[in-house]
Image 1 (tube, rainbow, N blue to C red):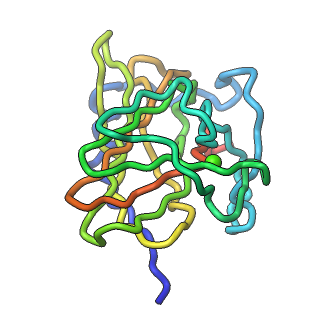
Image 2: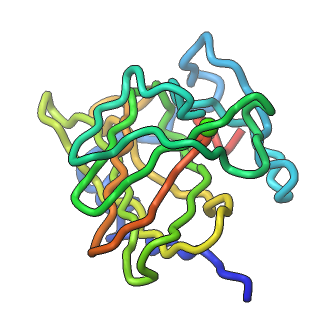
Length: 198
Ligand SMILES: [Ca+2]
């Protein structure tokens, strides 16, 4: 039986951004992070958008990532090897663990996160995704998704907000945290579409 992933987009994040940021949306032409290579890893899933790979988002290495609670690289790539056919690893997230990605520059124009995930453990274990950015010099953690898993699949695109103090660009990190016991979550090939509207 095919299993589908479902993201529950938490809270009214767009409304929150509007309340806190209050800045008018800038012209798309003014937005640029610079120096980012664009790829289309989700074209086989009828998603032609340009994405930027998170640093070591292929999870062949965890340099730049912050791992806790037993999160670690394991043998076995997502089966489509969209990053490179030479890739052989993914990141296992047992219960009690978490993994936080390196920061990536994104724009505020409807950026989205998309990656691959599987859960071979308890079907009751969920995967929470948070976006971490800054607001007025303070760290701000925004819940952006809650994943229900099964076999390896690309997730749905997940919208998130960026540095609310900047109307143009800002750094954002992503934290992946399994919820519940007997997690068998693994993630791989993490990408961001930094300018969804363009
Ligand atoms: Ca990999």
